[in-house]
Length: 207
Ligand code: SF4
Image 1 (cartoon, rainbow, N blue to C red):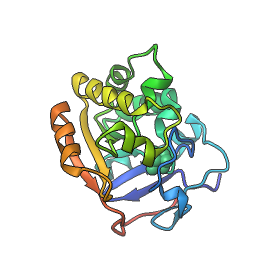
Image 2: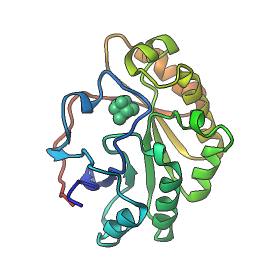
Image 3: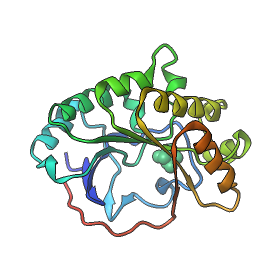
Image 4: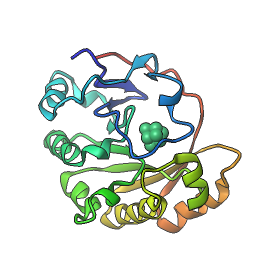
C-alpha cells in the first residue's frame, strides 16, 4: 500500500496504524492538514498486523530510541493489534511507547488494559490530558462518550500503578489552566509536558 505506515522523527519511528479516533479535538492536525512533516498520514484502509510487521522487518529498528504508536488517529482503537505488534517488537528488545487520548477503558470495560499493555511490554505511554476539568475537556475534545475525562484519568492511574512510564500532556491554549494540569499529573505520579502548536522539522523518511 502507498500510505505512510511509519515515519521517522526525533530519533524515533512512529507507526500510523489508524485514522479512527474517539474524540474530535478542536486542535487536531486532521482539521487543517493531511499529516505531519509533509507526510500524508490519511489511510485508504487500515494496514493489517502482518503488513505492519512486514514493514518493520525491513527496518533496522536498533537505530531508533523508541517505536511509537501515534499517527493521525487513536492507536488504542486497535488495542489487540497494538498488543500483538508490541509483543513482536519486544522480542527484539525495542522500546515501545503509545501516544493516546486514553479513552480505551470505556470501550473495554471487561479488561484491565493497563496490565495487558504492561504484560505485552509497553514501556511508556504519553496520554493527552488536554484540560483541567471535564467541562473544558468536553468543550475542546468532543469525546464520543461524555465520561471520557474521568475514564482517561483512571487509565492514567492504572498505567502508573502497573509500572508503565506515564506522561500527561496538554496543548498550550488560553482556555487551559496549565498549572492545574501540572498538579493533576503530579497527583497521579505521571510526568507532565506541554505540547506546542508547531513541530520541529525532524529527519525522516517515507515508507
Ligand atoms: S485524540 Fe488526537 S487524533 Fe483524536 S481528535 Fe484528538 S488530536 Fe486528533
